[in-house]
Length: 138
Ligand code: DGI
Image (cartoon, rainbow, N blue to C red; front, side):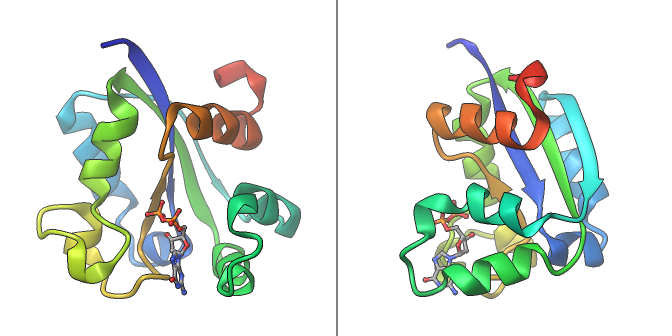
């Protein structure tokens, strides 16, 4: 299995609830390496570009409002199979399916305010890392 990079973001609810430290700790303990990190207020255009695949969904406006509602903590993590393993660590999108022990299963009860984003494939990881951090980290 090749070494990969993935894009992980603590959403505004996670930053407000001060779980950034715990999330970094979980990734470090698992054995992944932090390659980039920044706390940012997300410009609307960046939010819309990030969630472009959901543009036609009824919750798109709400999604953009939420992600621009306060600072997010954007990160790039590297390691073996990190894209898939990070998704497992995050837990499922639907709160009734996210298991205790996962980040969402430990911290979230709604589908929209769900603490964390992580790239769902190698193609999205590449796209999201360049979108948020530029070509230098990809
Ligand atoms: O990759 P995920 O974040 O697990 O899920 P996704 O890519 O399918 O959706 C992106 C985000 O959009 C998700 O974290 C929360 C929000 N979302 C997804 N499905 C719904 C939703 N928000 C609302 N309000 N309703 C939905 O059905």
